[in-house]
Length: 95
Image 1 (cartoon, rainbow, N blue to C red):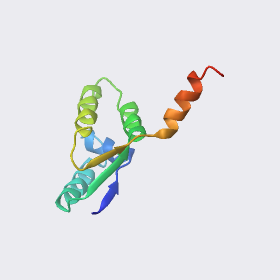
Image 2: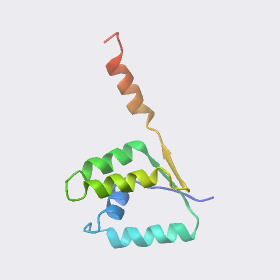
Image 3: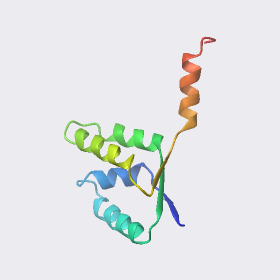
Image 4: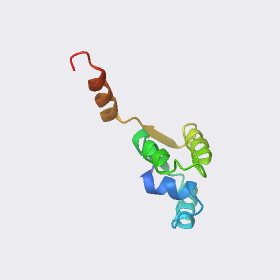
């Protein structure tokens, strides 16, 4: 099975119709779907997407999009273990 990593810029382009790469991203997504390509991203990438599209104009659309991704068959969201380690070190009683 073919896999494709989807990074921040691609998700942003797919969400934001005003993005310069929206049309291209839509075509690439359609091609990958036809090829039954398995998509891979990380929760940190999705955090970057949410941060980039935080403006009130698009915020609710971004939240809906990310929530739909969580249930999308054919997409693996890899947890970012580095962020978990940082979070643990911040709350550690030894600090």
